[in-house]
Image (cartoon, rainbow, N blue to C red):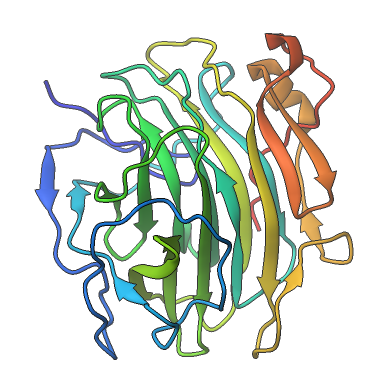
Length: 304
C-alpha cells in the first residue's frame, strides 16, 4: 500500500512512493565533525551554545529520508480533520531559537496521514506563494515508525521529512533543540543528546541571516478518516531567541512581538494551549476533561 506524505505549511501532498536512503545530514559542510556515537537522552541541560567548536560536538549519522513532494497549498481543512497549531510565532526576525520540548505518546493511527509534532521553525515568505523554512523536533506519524516517536527535520531544500532513528525516544523525554545561523545564511539544526550537541542538518536557505520563528505543537488528522485525535499535554519551556547580528539570547517574553491566532478553531478540535509564562513556557494538547471548549488558550499557526 502506498501512503501520502503530509507536506508542511497547512498543505497536503500527493502520494509517497516509499522510503529512500539519504545522504549526509548536512548539505553545507564547512568544518567536518566526527560522526556521533550511539548514546542516550541527555541527563543535563546544555553546558554551552551549539556550534562546531562546542565540546564533544558531532555530526548525526546518515538517516532515513522519506520521499516527499511539493505542497499543493491545500488550506482550510475543517476540524476535527486537518491542521491544528498550538503555540506562537514571532512578529519580527531573529537569528535563532532554542528550547526544550517534551515527548509524548499520542493516539496517531497507523496507516493514516495523522501526525503529531513538537517543533521549532525558522522561515521566510519568498513571495509568489513560496515559503522557505527549516524545522526540527520530534514527530509521531501514521505512515512511518510503527507508532514510535522520531527526531526529525524538514527543510525546503529537500522537501522531505528526515527521520533520525538512531535517537531512541520514549514518552517523557525532554529534548533540547536549537535552530540558528551564524550570519552566513547556513541554518543549522542541533539536538542536545548524550550530553553533547549533535548536528542534525545544515542547510543553505534563501531566507537570509534572520528569519521569523515558530514554536508549535502541531497536530494533523487524516482528512479522509476524521477522528478526535488524543494528544497528552506537551510541555515546552526555556525558549530563547537569538537577536539578529549576534549577541546573547533572550527569553521569549511579552516584550517580543508575537503572533497568535483564533482560539475557537482549536477548541473545536478538542485541543488547548496554556501559557505558563508568555511565551517561553507553555503546555499544549487535549483540553481538560477531554472535551472541546476547555479552559486553555489554543492557537493556530500565524502566517508571518
